[in-house]
Image (cartoon, rainbow, N blue to C red):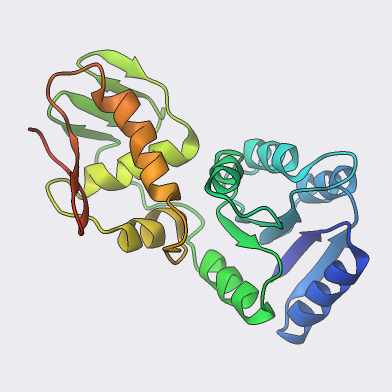
Length: 226
């Protein structure tokens, strides 16, 4: 497995490379965002690990550019910034997972293995359109409408809504949502899942009488009409 590490702190980058190579990964190291982007777009990598604070091109811009060109490659973001807003910004930029510095190498390896287990792409469903009540989601065109009105979603909002639609009328815990949508363990110290649920509510429910996203106190959330 080939991993691209983009990290401007030489000591941190060297430690990551040594730790990953000891586990059998092939590691390429870039010291700034511009060099990292060129390497990433050159292809051939199975995963990208990038810091957020980078010279020339920061990690958020870098992730957006990589995600636009390579939609399926996993991106793991490293940063010393660990607030909920920071994590939301990272996910919105295209990151699949988020690890706050300082971190234990063992945790990094667990996150990497989880991301690399992902299949290259979902098996094509019999129908590319999910429907529930007056809401429709087209998995091919990425269009979402409710009662004929188009709803604009970010990639993470789309994945969250898709998961809820596929599991409608069933209570979904925060831990399950974190595992299935973000492919990570739920950190009880943050509320980024609740933040995204609120984003969805504003777009999917606010303008309509019948609400579809409901909170089950102490349990999680459920997607159902009424």
